[in-house]
Image (cartoon, rainbow, N blue to C red):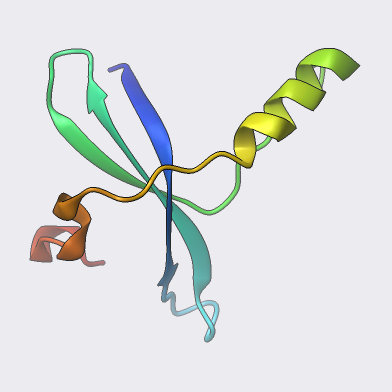
Amino acid sequence: MKITIESTTKIVTVKTSALADGVPCRVWEGVTEHGTKVQCLIPRLAAAGDADGRDLAQFEADLEQHAAPSEDLQMWPMRMIL
């Protein structure tokens, strides 16, 4: 499966049994190659280790850009709760 996602300004905390305080995750929204809307909770994102300086600088600049979340993010479906 391939998806295209965009970073939003929304950050949620995912609670786990291993970490009492939970893990902060940025919410990303996107669409699959077949048009299904998706929401992703991403705690960390890094460039590949072989990225050169210019590519890495562009990647880091792109990470600072965030869109406002859509209205779809106002409520999470129960099936997405762990």
